Structure formats: structure tokens, C-alpha cells
Amino acid sequence: MLVSPSRDRAAERRSATRREILDASWEVAHEKGIASITLKDVADRVGMRPPSLYSHFASKNAIYDAMFGQAWQGCLDALRAATDGVPSDPREAMAVMGRAYFKYAVADQARNQLMNARISADFQPSPEAYAPSLAVWELGRVHLALIGVTAEADLDLYSAVVGGLVDAQLANDPGGNRYARQLDRAIGMLADQFGL
Image 1 (cartoon, rainbow, N blue to C red):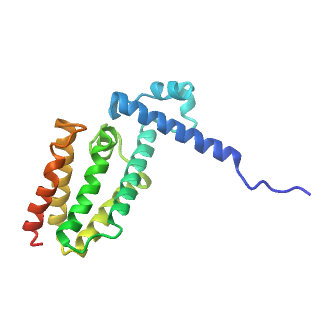
Image 2: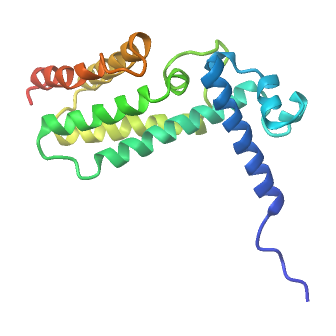
């Protein structure tokens, strides 16, 4: 009697190769910048010829797409972890979310650029890769609604202030804390504006 295999080893190898390609892509992004990834650089790191990458990713934009999804899923996971057991004080609850996003964003400049800047005129994330980004926005919206911040304009302002501090930190003091020190102050100013 023949027994059907319980594992799909070919699929496991394919998945492992895709992960290796993505890891190599992140390495290149960290060394050269997210917009400077080339298929040749990635292929060299994984021991392939560039055309062989096409059996795993249809294009460089397909690699960007997978990286984009990874980046936003990581952000979603970080924010979910930070908002478990959120303090009851509305101001502190708002700060918890802002600090968690700031910390995740400044930890990796290449990742933040992929998440929040137009890195290529022809790259647009797929709906699947974009889904974690939307989930981050929804988590923030729900979290802030629980403390009384519900106006769309207020959510936009909160996002712009925290994101602006991330950009200033990465542009002017990467690895430092010049703008990180301003985060609680800025969130306090927003809390005053929102009547919290």
C-alpha cells in the first residue's frame, strides 16, 4: 500500500528560496538603498544567475511587492504587541501607539522608505501586499477611537506628526534620538488639540 506524502517538499524548497531571495534583497537595500536593488546584486547573493530569479519573482517590482508586504506585516505585529493592555489614560494610550510606530519605523531606514516613499515611478503594491498597511491604519483608527479621537482629520494629523518625526529622525540623526525626544511632546500637543 502506498502512502501519500504529508509534506510538499518542492513547495517547501520553493518557499525557502523565496525567503532567501527576500533576505538578500533586504541586505542589498541596507547596503545600497531600497531604490538601488538590482536583480544582479540579489542573484549574486543567493548564488543564482539573474534570469533564474524569474522562476521565483516575475520582476524586481514583484520583489518590492513581497518586501512591502513583509514590512507592513512587521509593523502590524509590532503595533498589535504594543497595544495589548493599553493604559486607560487617553494621553498615554495615544503615546503608546505613536512610540511603537516610531520605534519600528526608525529601526530600518530602507524598510521605512519602502513603506512610506515612492521608490519607483512604476511600483505599486498589490492588494495582498497592501493589506497589512490598511490593517495598521484600521488598528490605529480603532485604538484612537477608544480614547475619543474619531475625526478623520485628527487621524490624518496624528499620522502626519508621528510620520514627520520619523522622517526628521532618519534624515537628520539616524541612530540618534534628536527627534525621538520630541515624540512625547508632540503627542502631548496633539492630545491638547484633541481635548484629551
